[in-house]
Length: 230
Ligand SMILES: C[S@@+](CC[C@H](N)C(=O)[O-])C[C@H]1O[C@@H](n2cnc3c(N)ncnc32)[C@H](O)[C@@H]1O
Image (tube, rainbow, N blue to C red; front, side, top):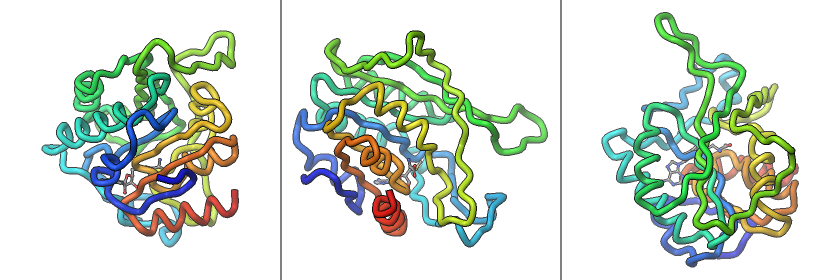
């Protein structure tokens, strides 16, 4: 598979065609199985700018789904490779089981604290995600940029005024932090659920090669636009 492309299709079908030990780093936030609809009206934004069509997974199938792709990325990563897997708390247990069954070493359990969550009436507002840093061996890459790099990251979500967007776009600062710590220039980075293409765009900006996979054609088109502008 040639690098620097975003493939339109189902990661479950495409991942098996990628070679063993061919990728340096995986950064991905898969669907969370929370019956997420990506409806325009869910967002306090100009609806016309929100792209619909997010592909969600039923929670009853989430463990099997997670096992399937996490085993694949373990096979595809080089021995020195790492994977950052982002998850909400609701189905985190399935991701943790899959990470262990795939044979990964769980190096860090990072908390990403963002600045706002969905308003609630009778419970606390969720304003964090989990990020699992998984490695295959002790030979993993870790560029120690800060003297005291902590595992709680307060990084703001981005506001995209008057621009087309997808509802779950990651902030570039978050993705760039992972790229800078766990890869080198020229490395190949895979995102099997690339959405609006944030991981590929950040890779281009930081001189890493990328491979994205996304099932929603509109999101793939938006990613290509973002890559052209980056
Ligand atoms: C949480 S979003 C990723 C957002 C992305 N990190 C960004 O910054 O835009 C998850 C993406 O996975 C896609 N997806 C769900 N199932 C998929 C599958 N089987 N193969 C490929 N993509 C899939 C969804 O359409 C959605 O765009």
